Image (cartoon, rainbow, N blue to C red; front, side, top):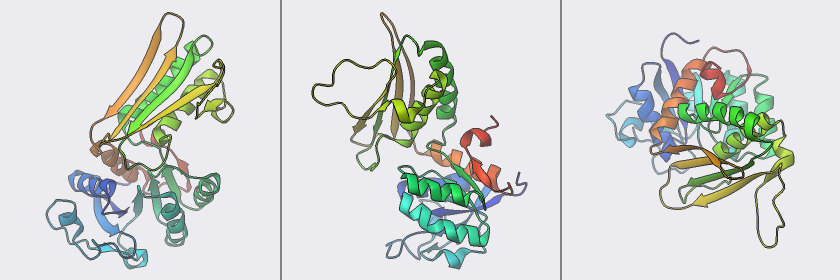
Length: 270
């Protein structure tokens, strides 16, 4: 909705995703970096955000107090931790800032706080900002609609050793898409652990398997396993750039929208 470049703030600016978002904003005609935010005591505090991200200096200093940047941005992009996200929501509500959330691993209470904030400000929350992943979600829903009665559904995901939540937000989104297509509620049919004598697999369950190690950016496969054949839908990310570009696109789309809870599907037009 925004015509001129949207001014973004990056929470967790010195992190892997924070730097990627700063780089994506610098390459975008839809956005420009207005603020870079970090936690108290961060070693990068006071540095030039552009130089910190491996770019030319841009004059935006890394700050630890959001109030210092209140006049410098319109949309906050957050890929940090749920507790940091929730802690900053009151500030965003008070100052009328839109929020793009790529953080995953929210508890029910934290998710409720996000939904409450969305009644006051525009919030776009997604487990994955990749265009390819969002296409996979549509394919999964269609595949499950056709295959679910006769095929078992399993979700396998792999990420780098530093990821702290499991299954990944993307894996859960894929499970939810498959469950929708199958006419099920993921809360009732998800199986997150198998150990010991588990007995035969129940037909209507959707299983999740997690791999953590190395520097894997993100691999996701959903398997539909039938008698004599198997269908797999896979997405592999080789760079965080795709997520950062998607988040910047989402920020440009979200600026100026009315209060509400939006998804990446909304930002991609369907």
